[in-house]
Every structure is written in structure tokens, then in C-alpha cells.
Image (tube, rainbow, N blue to C red):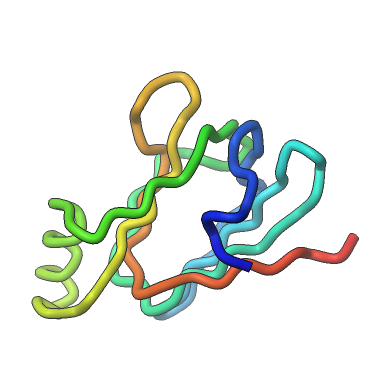
Length: 110
């Protein structure tokens, strides 16, 4: 499943976990279905206490200051990356941003 197909609005992030180059988000949608979003080749994460927070959507950006900063800090100046911004329904602010090469979405059986 593609990330853009996932119903993000009115859902909540349940948990996050990270490893050397992967970042995983456990997400519960408005129908109480759980999903796991695995971000690959992660070089940057910015998060503001997202567990339990309601979301409005995810914006994917191919060019941003956060991508540039992440590339610089990871010493990967030419890496093709995407910034995935998890947005709050209450304002236009990002509650969490992840810079990665891609992601995989899978339904958690339950």
C-alpha cells in the first residue's frame, strides 16, 4: 500500500521506534485499524511528542530546508530524499518530520 492511500485524517500515532537507518510509526486510523509505516534509509527525524496526537494529513516534500540540513549532518549532500511531514489538524504545523528515501505501509493484523 502507498502512503498516500492511507486515511491519515482523524487518526493517531500510537508509537514510534528507530534503529540505525529505519524509523517506524505505528498508526491507528479513524476506523481503529492499526498500520505500521516503515521509513527507509532515514537521515533526519524531528518530533514533538507525537504519541497519541490527532493528525490531519501527511505532506511529502522533495525539497525543503529540513532535507538540506539532514543531508549536511548525514554527510550525504547528493542523496535523493523525501521529507514526510505529519500535520496537526489544529494548525499548519508539522508534529513530526522524517527525511528518508521511501516508506512501506502495512496493515497490522488485529
